[in-house]
Every structure is written in structure tokens, then in C-alpha cells.
Image (cartoon, rainbow, N blue to C red; front, side):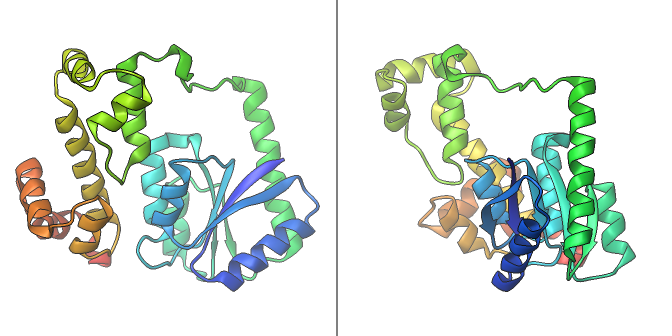
Length: 252
């Protein structure tokens, strides 16, 4: 069974798409529904889907921004079908450039959905036969303690995890882990976590319309001034300055 993540800010649209997918009779199952691109990314950080089916225009993070982030994080490993209510060449062109498998217009008829999903299955089968279907995920058993800790921290984003919590998860003394982490990575644990949180802040500032205090809260900062000072120390710019320089003009 092929798994689908549905992304649309309107519940009735998600329900209609789910029923249309079921009517095709093809081996696809909607495993989760997200209300915007950021919600989808959060879910994908902890779960997997074979295919993302997303709307274009959504609050917080739109479908094109979601595709850009998926492309940056996963390359061509994450496949996307765009379902939009806008018959706009500009949107379709951007979606294709970002690697969308198909661009469907709402309302999607069962026959059109069948054509699209069947085509995706054929292409995936051909690609597997040509390239094989080997995964590149590193099993936990093969990871070093430091690699495990780095993965644990990454999986905890956008939240925060302490050295003590990480040490407990890999069954090491916190002081020993601190020294080991510094030796293997060249930076201490706090510096590593801070860098990840600031990178996440940069992503949210450039790809979403969340207010700065909302981003700070999302990243575990109770004091927006502390967040702003830390961000400026990391990037050389205040959050507002960074957003003005990096958010596309059409989204500011």
C-alpha cells in the first residue's frame, strides 16, 4: 500500500480528496492530513509517506515553500503532486521547476486522480527496476554514540533537548558525553543545539508568515529578546532584518 500525506488548509477539501483517492481503487492510503506546509514538515520529521499531495495557497507556509524545503532537505527523495484551485501558469511552472510529479486542478475527478496515481506507480516501478530500491538510512545499531545524539537532537527539533536528556537516551554519563561530543564534532553540545535552532529559525523566517514571537516560542524561547540576541549573534542580523532580506518579495 502506498502512503499519502494530504496537505490543505480546508478540511472539506481534504475529505473530498481522500474519497476521490479511495474511488480510484488503487493501492493508496492517506496516512495523515496536514493544514499547511509547516504542519506537513513537522509530521515528516517524525514519520514517512511515499507521496505528498499538497495545495498551493495556504496560510503559514504555502505548497511551493513546502516543496522548496523538501527539495532542500531530501532532494528528489520526496515526491509531490500539487492539487490547486488556481489554473495559473505561474504556479504550475514553479511547481514543475520544483520537481512536482503532476499538477491537478480542483475539483479532481476520480478518472483524473486514477490517471495521475497510476502514472506515478508506473514511473516509480520503472525507477526501482533501473536503480534498485536500497535505502540509505543508517540503522541505529551502526551509529556511534555521537551520531545517535545528533539524530536525537535533530528529531527533537523544533523543540529543545538538554545534554542530560540526550545522555540518558544513549545511556551515557552527561559529563562524558559532553567531552566525547566536543572531541568528535569540534563543538560542544550546546553550540550544536543552538546552531540547529537558529537554522530552524532562519527557515521559519524565510518560508512562513509566523510572527517573530511565535517563532521564538516554537523554538522553546520564552523571552523574545533572548531569542533575538541569540539570532543576531548567530547570523549577524536581527530576525526582522533577516526576514526582509530572505523572504521572497511576493510573500513579504
